[in-house]
Length: 452
Image 1 (cartoon, helix red, strand yellow):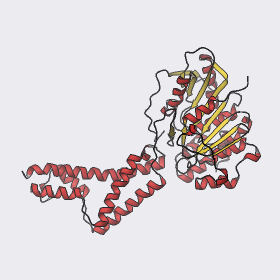
Image 2: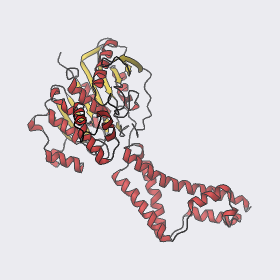
Image 3: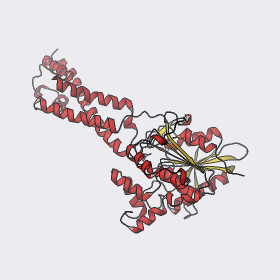
Image 4: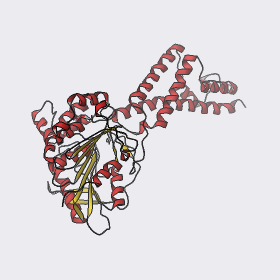
């Protein structure tokens, strides 16, 4: 009977070790997720369970209560006649050596409390957030979304109606890949050109909702690669990128019946950056451009990422051939690849710019990038002043005199906090971070059309 109790004791010990690993490894994953802007570590069930787990440990240490798992294991080992490590099983021996240490109770109480404070700080500054599966009515949180995606957890597969195609780039004659859908309908249809995020390519599943919309609405859809992740000179707003996207439009027009008065461009994060760049580089093509949490100035974004310690600063350096704040040639190259350099020429294109108010705090692109693009396209009287821009960037809140008093149901739970329109540009700041609300983006595009 005594020896038979050794196995239950080992089982409790395994559970005890698993509990400790959940608390410690869970916090490490939260810190990595915070730094890399993953979305899954913000899931409420995980975060509240993790917070409760360390809270129990801290409370027990201050009340002088022994861990029940330790008590139960000890009683079982005593009943099993195991009075030392030598009497334990191999598993029990090594797990006990891993788990238990000798020190005064106050030492453990202090260590547990400091660790608990770290958990609470992470909970406050990188809070849990409910994310929805990215359907038509949902918002997709972009992870730094290799952002939007290193930390993205998107389970949707590309619909069977979408196929991989190749087309010839006029930049260098290379064959460029894309995902493509053409509806089996009569008459000309709108074309949606959807752009992947900063660190991904044409296969990125974050873009599945774009394709779902086009299938449902009978639109032509193309999702080009435009030289893949923005980590080299051929990507990141290069001349190759410009040619590849325009060639993708030409390919879609050749393969499908495209209504040239309804060619739309959409993207988020790095896709929002490229969307605004293409708006300025080829304004005659687009009936509407929807850009979400976009980068608009590569030199400034390099500084933003250096300050926040994000790896995208290295991507900018690799793309422009040097540090843009130190190397004049690299700075010139960064400016050539920045949307703000060209946007003034796109004043006649309807542009919808969106950003979550906490982006730059919980995400990688400060809201100042979106506001600067709006100010460039807006009438002088409609622009947002420097003091208000600074307040929104620093405090992640909209000043009272700029707050939007209405409702926009297309944004769902992402309440619109600021809405400014001037000439052909609209700026929306919403209660969120580095993300896109697909329904809002696509419904706005669907209302745009060039004059015949």
